[in-house]
Length: 258
Image (cartoon, rainbow, N blue to C red; front, side, top):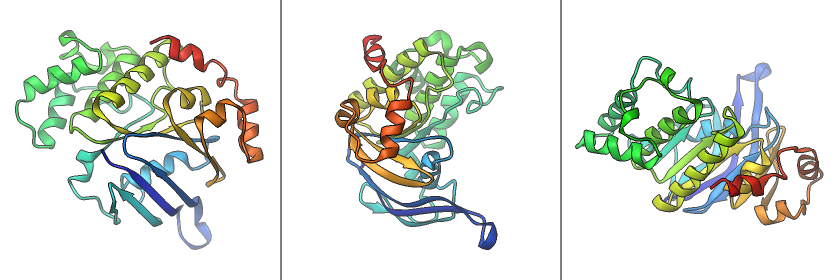
């Protein structure tokens, strides 16, 4: 397992007069094996933090550590075995002309694994898909099935950290609950560390131990999920989110689907 540590993280786009500061002075820690949520309205900087972590945004300052190792501007090859990401849109993240077998096989080969055939079978079983799905293409799968393939691909390098960028927001509510329960089970079975971005407080309450609330690129409050459920925020913006979120109360329904 690996912990994550962010200290005074700043992320920006453009330079000089065209510069836009997307994240400002963000600091938080995700312990090994924990599940941590970043919440806030669209454009608050949540996904930007994930993209800076994986090296997709080079314009950042501050400190990012994974497993105690400080990251530079470039990522070593081993980083991408240890840290993997599941994106919001399961259709856009899968190549439309690659079968499930090709998607998983290519990932395994890229990371230097042998025994590809057996590993593909196990990955599909781990995400609740049988061998019948192995040679199907993305257009032959439902949204939930596509996201399970995306999760399997992220698990292929045997990472210790999964970054979850709104992983169920494009899915129907019933399917969303199934995928969330799958992710919760995988975290426990594989002792994974999760950093999840979501605008849905019900999802965060179901999945995470602790959350950071973001507003206009800044973290305004870090709180435990127990405090969130008890409606005990300190910052007015956090209270506004809790009171205005229509998706918060049905958290028990998500847990009951399992």
